Amino acid sequence: MVLRVQKIPQQVIQNDYIYIERVSNKQLFLNLENFLLKKPKYQKNKQNKLDQRFQMHTILKKIKKLDQFSEQFNFFIQKRSKQKQTLAGGIFSLTICIVSMCYLGYLLFLYFGNRLLPKITTQTYISTSYQELKTNVNMFGFSLMLPGGITLDQLQQKTGKQYITFLLQHSVYQQNQMVRTQIPIYNCQDPMFLGLLCIDLQNQSDSIKTLFQNPTDLSQSFYHLTVSPCQGLSNCATPQEIYDLIFQDSVAFIIKIKINQFNYITQQFEETYKFDYLQFDDSLSIQVQYVLRQSKNIINQGLIFQNTDTIYNVQNFQRITTYFISISH
Image (cartoon, rainbow, N blue to C red):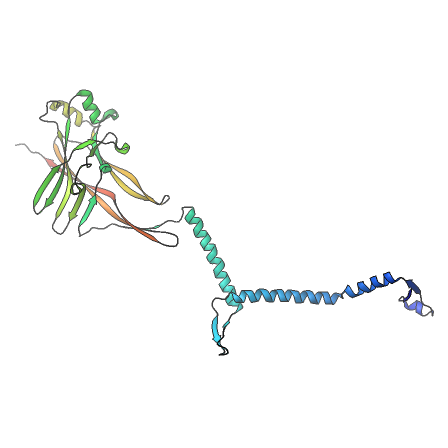
């Protein structure tokens, strides 16, 4: 059993007596423990400020270590070099890293979303050097466009008469000489050329499949198509029947040429087609020349490593028409 002196108010002390309270051992130890664990309020605030400063110092130290623009200096002591890292350099380096990662993520989003367009350079110019163009079966189609949507072949099979004859030749002009090779034609099997006639290049040599132009010696090759009324065959229609057919307002000669254009969405070359129409005149002979325009396309694409492809395509054509008038005396 111990005695505990309790703090007495001033007015009570003046009366010359105090209170004495009995306290058990257990209560004494509990009071002592609370006293030792309890810190003054000002010590808590001071400790919190020290902890905050330490954490801030640690963060700033880590940011300084990110400084990629620091300069090295050497004290010549044990061959050790130090770097003068600054807080401004660390913040600047951290900003560059964050911006770079955001931009890389944005590029990846565009690339995998097929929104990152490749760089395409198309050169169109008048060349003074040798040029050639490889043709294929499904590049040209031609025929007569008749009323009612029927084809010339359907009309001739229906009537059993031949109205128009087509003569196709591969012509080569070289050294002031013209060499012509006849090429067969057939009904196109390609769905995009149904109802038209195509050039049969299946069993032809590479020289027949190639069109070239050499401005140096003025040599060139081209396809020459002659369209004329049927003559000399046993099943030819009469001249009047031919006249009534081909000189109608709704009848025209049609030619279809395949060209290629780049699709920026699919990032591939896609085939498209252009048409040209020509009507006949009984008082005129017409010579039409179609000049194909070949483009050189340079494609640079790739997110990190750039791939460069050079592709030659028929981009367009130009029509040149010459009229001949027969004058009878």
